[in-house]
Image 1 (cartoon, rainbow over the protein chains, first blue to last red):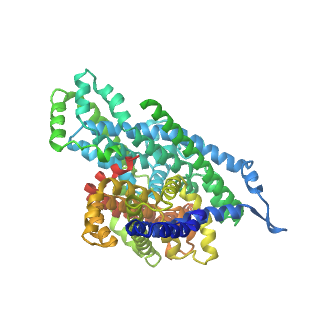
Image 2 (image 1 turned 90 degrees about the vertical axis):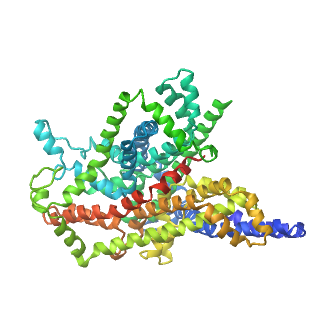
Image 3 (image 1 turned 30 degrees about the vertical axis):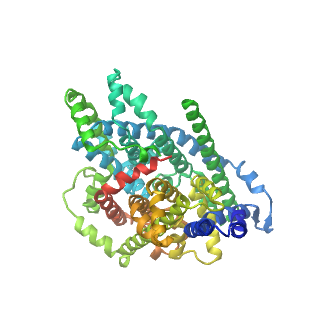
Length: 316
Length: 306
């Protein structure tokens, strides 16, 4: 990164020397940078610098007796042997494995149905399914928290009327499903719109040709539509993966009303937040943030690499 | 890329296709419509509960009335009055803060994104390929992992607990830059820019008068998306701000919820404030999305570019 900023003036200077006659391309060089510069500045200050600073901070440890001392990679050794952090990573990994396929299937199914229908009702449904995207995650979690609650929600009234045992979604056994439901509700509509938009870009002549070849609606959906929107599906998967691994808002909001089902180390981000703001342990919190960033980056890079290879394999 | 370049089917062709599909298959359409009906119910239930609950007074809320239907009293007005008067109108302050952060962060980050996207798409300069690779890589960095280091960094400059601590980090939107650059390289013809150059127009005038109008759909989409993400942001302001006067709605309501659940007896009146406050906080964005449908529905297909 510093590499880039340091080298830039040198390169510009040398081009100036080499290409004095071609003024246009020289100007184009500088003007291109002028357009990019404001964003580049923000990028350096609020992405590169915090990453570097987090890494720097993570190399130190704060002890009561010793003060802040350089400790090398000790914080990382501690993080990757810290059951609280590992449990959190395990939770978000398991959560992604359940949530993402469910969410993608739902949004794909809705997008396919909406693409096939052109009624007013379908247009209304498209809007309603998308609506939760406009609702802050804090408010979405609160609303579901109310619905889940035995005091405010309809669940205790329903189980009473049915005469069955009380169903408590926020109990430790059910909290996983309760959170899957909230996140699906919040994001499925957004993913649906992305897939729907991709489907709308497909030339209907393709479907017509398939129909003439005797394909039925299911075959057209699975063999033609789904492969054609596969790049949209990859984008969604990446978004969902990045979002889920940094899970924070929903469990943080449900924590006060979940009666102990959600501990402060429930997800890696919550754990880092607690270390930073409850224990003022910014060195360890930085190590946790940095470690989480690396885990997410590697997970996404592996996924993209794999999906790229697979798709290349298809086309060959 | 495909969605942009592939010719979009005309409306007529779609209608025709729909009419053909609608004829003999009309009966089969019942199942998909039922499916959609069930989904609409699922997606609207929480909102319905919120609307119903916001009309109840404390007795109605806790008195065992039906949770999904209106109670005997209709206290929406009184609830609204106590919401805006509670604690010297702190809720209105939060509302204003949210609006300010969302508009400043959204407009700022979109302006940076449109400039940088155009620069990446239309100019060849040293370090361009490297910067583009860096940009794409940064889309994969979880932004919340940056919150704590940014907090420590800003607190050493005594910038935490100021509006800048929320607005400045919100200006970072690598994905917006990526969308803009894809859109600019597909949607703006080089010939047009060259023609303007031959006419003697300066580069910034060309950007403002030729490129910017062409990028309007992408601009509106990125603006809407970044306003939404600023309005909905929770982790960043939660970490950065400590004085309630600066809170956005999300952090403020989170604060009330913590207080209400910590003190279960006296918190009762706070719960009805939380409910009506939540309802009011989603009104602006819901209105924005319903009225700007034309823009985001077309523009979101940008998200499927690869």
